[in-house]
Image (cartoon, rainbow, N blue to C red; front, top):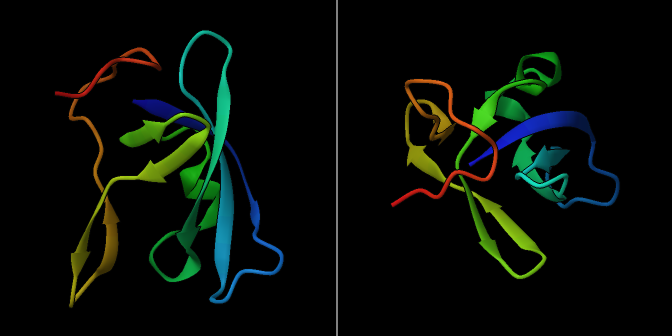
Length: 86
């Protein structure tokens, strides 16, 4: 689990995207990207998101909807950054 601390335009991405900086607990931050079409940059900052971590690689966990595009999975209550999802 992590919290988005910054969202910037992703330079060099194939599709218009945001590069998110996400706090994942213990003062550690990782980067992951999300397509711009589904979210406003300002709405992403401060939001909790589910993140799959493998070493230094981070992937946002999302559902792919034909109607809504990529929909980020989020907890229904606040949890601490770094909380394990199981």
